Length: 123
Image (cartoon, rainbow, N blue to C red; front, side):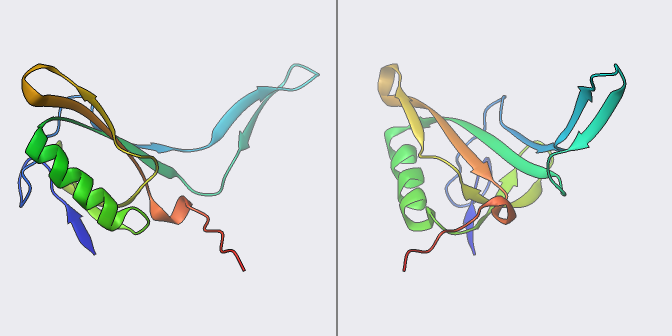
């Protein structure tokens, strides 16, 4: 399994404040017609999603795009710099890069736990 290195490691891609890996319980509090509150689970297990933020040079963005191309549809390890936890992730969207002055880019990468992706195979 490939490793998405951030802040330390081979590519040295620094994570910015705002990078977050979070769980969603799927619990929804509803009020029924008689006024009673009811708790409903939308799904059976916690769902993990994440937003990874970077401020990268042209070369660093090229490294990230190469990694994305090679691992676009497969799981990879991501080390969260805030607590050094390693998460197994998959990309959930294309890389979003906004050019800034001086050859830098504000980059946003969206990830999701692979158990939450349903693959459709065409026959």
